[in-house]
Length: 413
Image 1 (cartoon, rainbow, N blue to C red):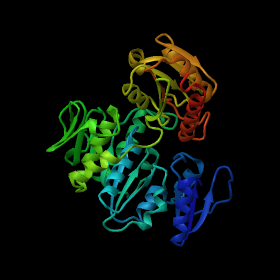
Image 2: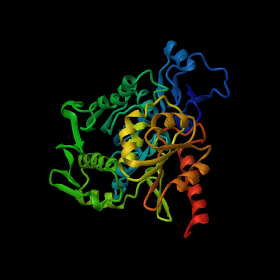
Image 3: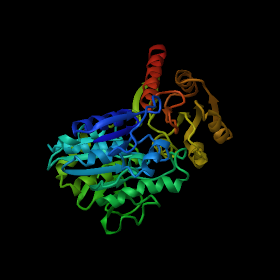
Image 4: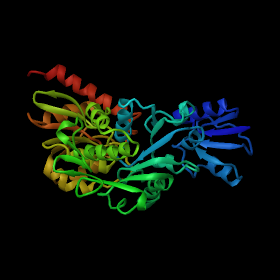
């Protein structure tokens, strides 16, 4: 049996290894090193970064060869229950939070998918009684065929990846496809695209009104379960949503309330998501490098006041004008970087001071100079990182380096 794997990044490499273990002769294909391909292999597995209209993908589809994604491949060798989490923002934190609580309770739990750990790398280790928590991107969902899960979570659907999808409607449809593949859906009642979806299989959370889990002032309420937000380590309204979604999933899985509370209180979050970096002479530095779209930037801005914002990056065709009133209320100045620097200047320059810097180091120094004691310097780019960095992680690490240099130079001055 021959299998072609298209795209040899992390997930493609893991898929190839799994196929070899299952007796396939694997032909790896990468655009950077094109090679002759078999006319009609038994199976084609494509990496999520490879678009459906890729000529090699289309060639095999026309020939009637099954084309699936890496997640679909791994699913075929997975046992136990699966929780699948998607959404434009918050999915990594929610995935990690659910997994952390399961581990806290002594469950045999796995984590992977878009989270950075390919599903194919551990699918064979799962067993009846285990629980796999997957973060799924729209790219991964669109390649599913037979995939089914116990619970699906859709946190929110807002514009993103418009450089890959013809329209926002196409992007939203890719996300919502996951609802058809689960026994139960956990959805955000406050998102107009999700309200009313899921039929009788849906549980809803809300920070604006009554739902299966909701905010009552500063408390999370879910039936008789009540937990004050002040007792939880992750701050901001977006994290309240992540807690509520996780709570509904964990209750569905039968996790006891005391385990949920213990897990919530001991989960300290993920790097590069509104991560506290340091305070230098009364100025707080926050690393939100994971912010790669308008909605994630909005949620970061809602979490702080007196902000000097560092923003900008790769241009994905996003419109930042819906943030104008929020910027006017909460932002003192913007330091713009990357391909979209001029876009930030034209969008917000009449509201606040907008300056353009060439790199993250000079941007951090300029933001510090513009800030005063009590202010927050917030790196929340609202854009992808690929114009200047390999990843959002690298962007966040460079920002932390820049802050460390400021500490060395100005601490105590």
